[in-house]
Image (tube, rainbow, N blue to C red):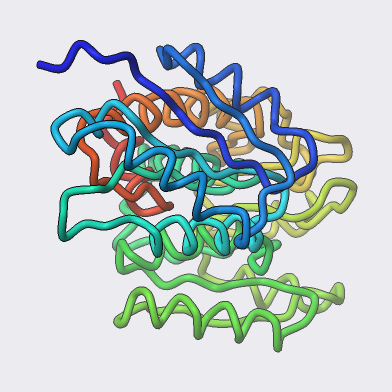
Length: 291
């Protein structure tokens, strides 16, 4: 058993590294936290080499990398660059986690919450704001369970592009792009849906109460917007499995407790090996094991 301290290298694509991510890392038990802001792919190689060339392979599980920031696409680019500079054939690797904008941990927590109440393999779902970073990951996780998933967007072409991306990741995914830009789109998008997850931008009501009340198949709604007005009208931000008019409701804070637990558990798991890559699927598996 190595007695070396745990070190987490935080690579943030924003100019100032996230205080939120730093606090969670400390609360997860990280002993030494090195943070860098404004990280771009061209900056990554020496940072990775500083991780993998300073400890022998038997101790590299005590070093890990966290990629964050507000821009998910920028984080994905940094993650790809990190992986490019690891040297697995010689055991010179460290575990890496991606959670830009909290998208992976939030999506994992939302789908875990839904799975408490419905069979995700059988339930038909609708993801509103489905082309955003959290919505895409929610839809991917739901599709991975085998259920039929509608991806809602004001622009159907954008939703189609997300469907194609999910099919590349989940070859047998049953996904459908739907437009939700007009008042007449809502009833068609909701038809037959047992689960609705709203993952849109703050300030937009994606599911008005009158449409929700008319959706007879609806069993669970999850609103991931913490800023008023609610993305799903009538859902309170603190709802955590609360039944309202016969529908189980979750608000952003109601999901947030699981998101925080998943984030901490994922950080701790980085130090169990030197070869883990924690993207949304791996983080979801960690969330499923939470008490």
